[in-house]
Image (cartoon, rainbow, N blue to C red; front, side):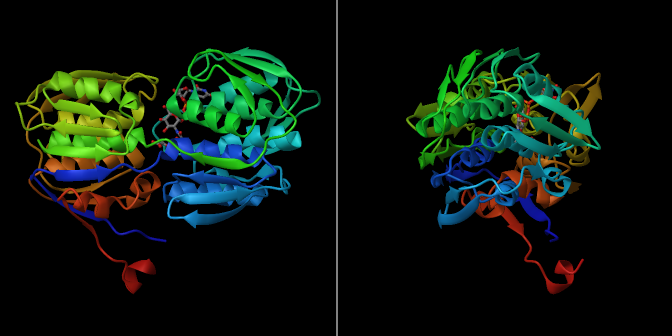
Amino acid sequence: MPVTPLHITGGRPLSGEFAVQPSKNAALPIIVAALLSREPVTLHGIPRLSDIYTILDIVGHLGAQHAWVGPNSVTLHTPEILNTEAPYALVSKMRASFIVMGSLISRAGEATVSMPGGCAFGYRPVDQHVKAFRALGLEMDEEGGNFAALRTRPLSGSYVFEMLTVGATQNAILAATLGSGQVVLENASIDTDVVDMINFLNSLGADIRGAGTNTITVQGVGSLRGGEYRIIPDRIEAGTIMLAAAATRSHITLTGVRPDHLRAVSMKLIEMGVGILESGDILTVDATRAALKPTNITALEFPGFPTDVQPQMSALLATVPGTSVVVDKIYPDRLTHVVELNRMGAQITVSEHTQIIQGGRVHGAPVKAADIRAGGALVVAALAAEGETIIDGMQYINRGYERFAERLRGLGAQAHQAELTLASAMD
Ligand SMILES: CC(=O)N[C@H]1[C@@H](OP(=O)(O)OP(=O)(O)OC[C@H]2O[C@@H](n3ccc(=O)[nH]c3=O)[C@H](O)[C@@H]2O)O[C@H](CO)[C@@H](O)[C@@H]1O
Ligand SMILES: C=C(OP(=O)(O)O)C(=O)O
């Protein structure tokens, strides 16, 4: 299905309130984790995004029935696993799909999953998933781009991750949740999305200790019950909007946020001269008080500055006079936004994976998003830019931001996506 470009006429401040969506990157693994229960599980706080529809298709193929029971609530029910194979056509769309491997191993003792896809911003191996599975006792085979796992004895033992990885930590936890052995994961990710998945599994009766620390112990249990769970707010969307407010020198309020998940973004904005006020689940951003100062950022694992907000930060810094430097230690090649921002008058050069940004004015231009957060960056820049920006590649933005044009209009932005005409629908 073709999607029409987003038109934004920028250069004016935003105002009002923005209700942050529930977290895509927490919801995806929790939907996969719901496969572990034979009983119905109702999840509240599921954003209506293309990635969510994709994962629902994937778990549906494996045996989960699902029904939307509210605007952002889904009930999943998997009495039986019907398939232990997740084919390329489904898995190639999205990186998060690779963790169905863990759920299938737990529930069925075997899994064949194609190498995952996802946003193309550089090398994204799955070696830690595979090494962890092997260390915990699974037989692993790789053939023709597929990974096959077979459980011949209860999972047990330990694995020390070679780097902090959200997905591999989640995959190993899922694989060990149902069973009779004990698994210890060291140098495990403390990311909010790992913690939320563990909290969800424990709410159904799993025995997983150490969430939010680098050592996670999973004691296998026989089965999980059904239940209800609410997913955390989307800190990446919230971060994008905070940076949009700063780029447009606005004063806005974000509602339904977890300020404690956003500290790295808030601290950088405060350092730049932006006022940030936290009160419960409300966060106010005031960029009207002083001229903003340039800064340097390095994207790191949580609780460091998120890689998923790095391109949007580059867009903001392109509007701040002076020199800023941006490095991404998680995905050093996450740079597809640079050429497009430069099309809008930004002055960003890249040397050895380091963005050197000479901030100043940006102007509207036709641009193209090549991945989700590059799209977020182009929206931030377009809101700040004089004139009209036409952003192509909305299929990427739609992976991560729900009804974005409409919700940005709620902040007073001039943003609209043309309706699909019969002619464009047949493209
Ligand atoms: C759907 C979802 O939630 N995606 C997020 C998740 O991706 P994802 O879970 O894939 O990212 P990881 O945390 O696993 O990756 C972190 C780093 O470890 C490396 N690595 C990872 C696994 C592995 O087997 N080998 C290896 O070398 C990666 O290349 C990367 O440099 O976390 C990323 C890092 O916060 C975010 O950008 C993604 O938006
Ligand atoms: C990069 C993302 O997703 P994926 O890991 O599926 O590519 C993202 O959510 O920013």
